[in-house]
Amino acid sequence: MLRSGRKIRSFFVMGMAVVLGSVTAWGSTAHFNDASKVKGSGDWNAFVQKWDSTAQDCTNVSITPGCAQTEINFAWYSRTDGGATPVVHFGESKNALKAFSGTTASVDSTLTGGVQYDYNYVTVTGLKENRTYYYTVEKNGTQSAVKTFKTGSFENVSILYVGDPQIGASKGQSQNGETLANTDGAANTAARNDSYGWNRTLETAVKNNSGLNFIISAGDQVNKTGKAKEEEYAGYLSPDILSSIPVATTIGNHDSLNPDYAFHFNNPNPTGNGKTQAGGDYYYRYGVGLFIVLNTNNYNAAEHEATIKEATDANPDAKWRVVTIHQDIYGSGLDHSDTDGMILRTQLTPVFDQYKIDVVLQGHDHTYSRSKILRGDGQNHQNYEFRLNDEGSDYDWDHAYNKDTGEKIPLVPAADDAAGTAAEQGFANDNKCYTTTDSGSTVTNPNGILYMTANSASGSKYYELVPTQQDYIANRSQNWLPSYSVINMTSSSFTITTWQIRDDGNIERIDQPFTIRK
Image 1: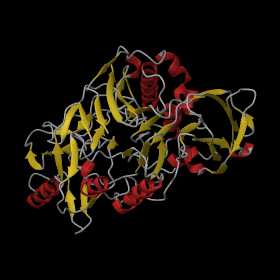
Image 2: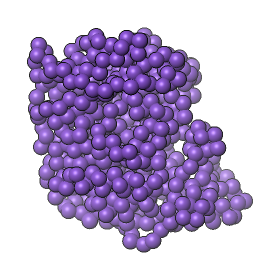
Image 3: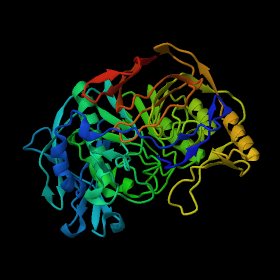
Image 4: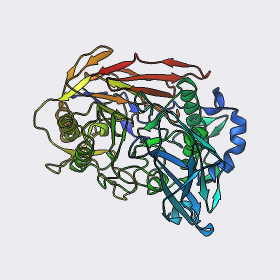
């Protein structure tokens, strides 16, 4: 997220308030990925020439994991006036595709410029590991071109983990003498820039990591909050790679207040918990892993706990329990980690401990960090939440609210606001609700949880790191380059390795591989 022009007068280090005085750090940043000046993902000028048609096509297909590794889910828009036909033709032979039918319903036409669309949901079942499949999708009765889909191993699973593509977030930046704009349709040049960068990261990751089973996105697929921007979703869904690899998306704060997220993604096992306008919590099983995705823009921790309980009760034999959330309750970025990012920390930490979660994947802070192994401190703490602004168009980024007392806590109190400063310091101290375990590059049967925060995958926007590394962080990085992580999961090990993409298109590792063994 971006708090334009918002001055951050103080920051917290290990629960203590440090006043910067005359030094001011800005929530916004001048650092972004200029797509016109990097190598990879084809020719930039050719991409620009195609942008008009790319931005105007809101019918791109999205593929998500199904309830289990033997299923995948499809979603796409089709014109209402052509008659919706929610059918996917799928099989191992191009000449013998089986028809899978699904459901359809109307898209709110205010989201699509008054043009009426229907969204289509279809689930394909019966997938086997290490197979090549072919499929077409019906749009108003007409089959699309044949696409190829490959499954990998169900025992040795490879996952691409990315953070905050946030298509459109580079608005206001300068590119070749022009200011990137976020106006509607093809005129959204910020979305054009970030779509190119997103595609470049996906192509780079796939080129260097064959056999990826699926992708996890830790949220903020698009940038516009409180108003649908279909060209941002069009850009997000435009990479060819997304026609062959499923993506388990997380609802970020920029996605959460728009219903079009729910139309574009057919998520498995929706629980009805943690809902905002975009949707709520869901979960899925893949191999020996149980993956639980929480919409933490809803601050009802009891509902998130209900989702975790439902998922773990249904999958008691899962070897690994992985949660994805957008807000980085244990991160290291200046803009979020010591303010709104940790608002759910006191509530979710003991829940994650109780249900023996192994790894929590986060986004939101547009920096990279890896925590030490963490557990709750077993003490009683207050509970906090965010609320919407008066217009209901965005979140009130300036205040946390104590759910137990109703206290309104300024996250950036004025220098002469003694009461606000005391409330802010109390909030920070209360959120030191964890204990840490130092560890090397490999841990065995750890008594705690690993928390990861992913940097921007598209390079649409970056934030500074907090000046002093928190005591719960093992390693962190901000080199103003797009990055991605690869997770390798077997029945006995869970390894995560992170890479950044240089402007010349080459990759380099930014942290040692970290492995949990059981």
